[in-house]
Length: 221
Image (cartoon, rainbow, N blue to C red):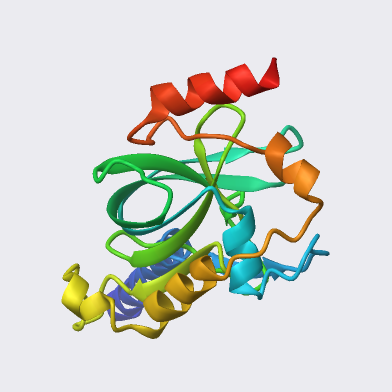
């Protein structure tokens, strides 16, 4: 009788241990689950696959290294995600930003319920250490904004790429660099020229911010 009870206790203890272990594993898996990447489609106002046109609507084009992801912001309905990054400017192609760390807002990011990364088609989530070609626009508040989709931020080197380099002699030979310089040299503004003058803006990270801001305000009057 004692032996049967003893064996029964062992079985019960074993089952309970399995249940606790299984629960623990489930919690760990859920906690460490990597959110899915969801790419949304949209109607573009112009051909965003044409780098010359993207260069034409960009106030700044520069090579930068992602230093840190600061936070994710959401629109009023909690749907659209916008991620704030600190990026170190390595070289300016168009415009002249300070060769230092700047803060920018990029369209796309982790959803509010943290179940997936929401980006536009042909885009990706930036990682700390990535070196990219950024096509940026200055906002009405003089911040830097990177639109989602293709040719907003194009990867030159991923964070873990063994070929990663901030040497001009090295990255200037990459396809992305060569294509971007060519696009800038042949940039095309895809809208009405009158609209271009109305969209004249400057970032607070511009090396000549004060003078350019004053000139823009003067032209408005």
